[in-house]
Amino acid sequence: MPVPRPLRERCREFLGIDGEIRYVFLASSLGGGASFVFVVTDDRIAVVSTGPLNRATPKSVWGSYPRGTRIGPVEISAGASFEFAGARFELDDEYVSVVNAADAEVFSRDSFPHDPLPDL
Image 1 (cartoon, rainbow, N blue to C red):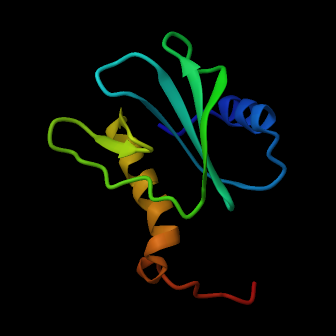
Image 2 (image 1 turned 180 degrees about the horizontal axis):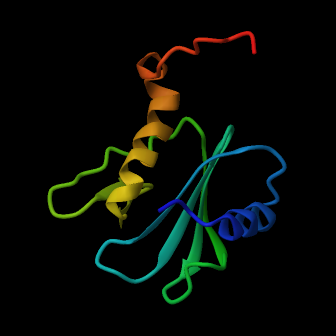
C-alpha cells in the first residue's frame, strides 16, 4: 500500500520541501519501537521520526543525508530489513521495491527502461 497522500503532504510541510518528492516509504526500528518515514528528493534523503504509536504525524528529523547515500540493500531472509546510517530498520515487503528503485535511480541508472518518447 502506498504512503497516504496526507502523510506525504505533512512530511513535505514539516521538511519545507518545495520540489518533487521522488520516493516515500515507512520503516521502523528493527525489533519494534520507533517508526520512521524515509523521504527521498532529488538532493537528499530525510529520515523523519513519527514516534512509536502514531505513524501519521512527523515528530522530528532523525537524519538528513545526501541523495548519493545508498539506502539498501534490503535483506529479506527473516522479514525485510536494511541498515542505514548505522541503524537497522525493518519495513513491509511492499516497500522493498521502493528502496530498490530509489537506489537504482542513483547507482544503476542503466537498469531503468529507456524512455520511448524522450521529447515529450
